[in-house]
Image 1: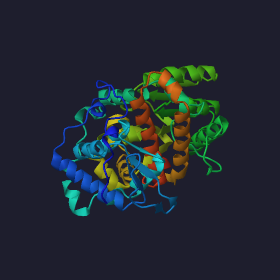
Image 2: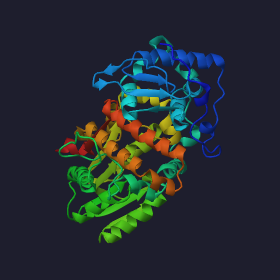
Image 3: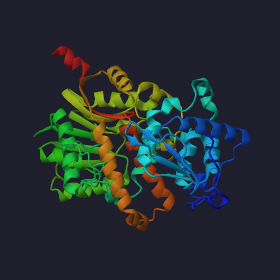
Image 4: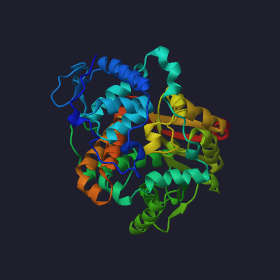
Length: 436
């Protein structure tokens, strides 16, 4: 497939980018002509085989497949093909995301385009060229490692952006993890707050049930969020200790616990999971393992086992990806790790099973519900887009808004394509189970 370049009038970067805040978006990367040509050839070859429609310029005809398995194919519009291919030639998929942030391409259905790409991620580059992956894929910066100091920096970069920002698109309880819907919605549109809140409470209650949380239970939560799980656990009569590395979340979680009348049963601390001491009847950790980093998964699961009292149980919620994709991602600096979750890595089910077993834990319950995360992300993105003026008023510029929109759409596409899943697990001490 040959793409006709657009007229010169559309070649400029469309989104103004602060060169200090967004250096790699504000300027085009240095890339050799050869790399750009190779990138163009590979991209054109890949797109020609996918159920996507490609538009180049305002008046050029569509190229590529017109329909897909689910009906009309979504359209990807290249406003500046030269810049698009140059960025991909220089930085691979990081460049793909940065090109969107710069406004060099758009889509009529961003989730649809990204879902198609996620479904065919292993076919985008011809198999004989896989061994040259290192020419485009960069290694993760050593500064992103989740040492105790590094983990606090990484958490700060995402979760301390602004409590007000997260409040614009999350449910009123500020739950920032997958909800569980009943039933799962299939119609487009924004659900009422009370429906999303009920779905988030359903998720929390399932985890608390797995942890057998009730009156008198000593519960530890690793990863406070904004305190909704701790508040609901305390309402069941549990005494809750919850730890976080986010100063913004710490302050608001304490305030929310006080407003809910459970401050006497909820203790919120700024503390790394590796430094927690004590023994607990139950430990709950919701979508926190993704921020740990593969090098520190042994520390994480060892901490879970060490903190369990005899007969205790762990309730864990985790996003997962296929094992081979996890291994490839672990070696690579990705757009997500550069702009959204520095130091993060989504584990595979195999990695969770291996690391937990090595720490002396046994998985006794495992349920997946990735379709519910896709819907959760759909709701967050719809709310975020609806609140564009309010996001701007908080001081977030157009590049940030496109970055966040891309992040939410990219994540939803991961679940729509079944590239990602989310699981709720119950773990107990292996020696306890053997004694029964």
